[in-house]
Image 1 (cartoon, rainbow, N blue to C red):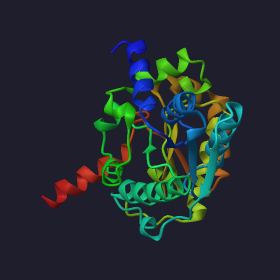
Image 2: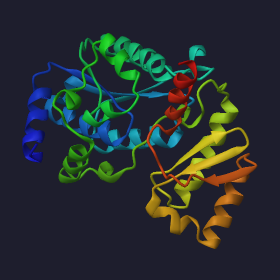
Image 3: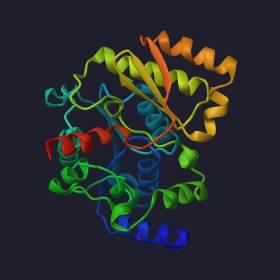
Length: 273
């Protein structure tokens, strides 16, 4: 789809709404959606960010800064870790999104806004995404997904509009760093957040720290291997991540893979069969 056509179709779709609350995480997708929705709906829209123990503070702060820069009505709501997520079940994304979007719907009702939208795109259909079911059940609209807009489209359009987030690495909540059926604790979430902050400070983008007990398994794009394996960089990285509370620091030779811990679900299924 031509990027200009994509742009106009998205604006037209949003223009049809009488008002909307945008679920705004601060990521590439929701930032574009928030920006365009604000341009089209003005004061009849609101951006709403949910802050949980498994979302790092820096991501919420970036959402706040963006909203302030563009004078967008914005609210941050804090939610505790739901008890149902403590054992990190395979359907965690469904359970989490159900809780999060019920909260957003409740808040939207306070402002007499009946439409809640979020930033899923066509590429989100290519992986295990149980959270999509929660969106359908709660009648949350996903205009970019409905229009067949891809991640690449979103990045190109964001760049065209001058949004700083156009090349921001994709991000997922900290629960995605922990193997399924592993108890979630605040200490573990803090440890992972601190370890990933180390990568950010060393300008290692698009990376993940998958946490396996006392092992930190780093996933990063293959093109960044030479940089991270430089003697001075490697030593510094190991020292800093061990200081976060890990005994071993490893590099996954397969590189960064979205939802890599979902491999265990297939293994569990094969064993059952």
